[in-house]
Image (cartoon, rainbow, N blue to C red; front, side):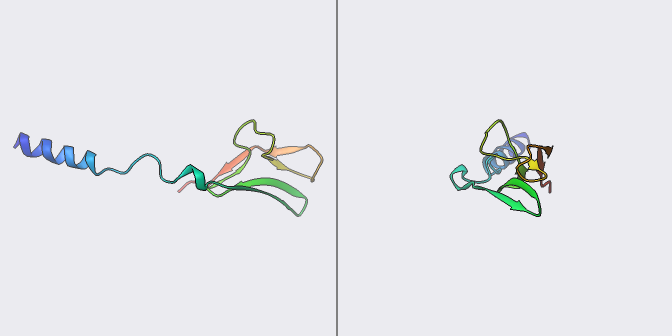
Length: 77
């Protein structure tokens, strides 16, 4: 019985999903400027600024004012 349980646990760990869901090479971002709001949108479910990268724009309103209201939003499923 213990041997079967060990085999089941081993197979479940062997066939478990990996932690990385996608290839980082396919991650992209774009800056949008719509209705006096400017921000950066990523294709992996995050908008705003993910770090201290100056190329990423947090939610700025009005455009080119330097006033940032939201740093980052994310889609949670």
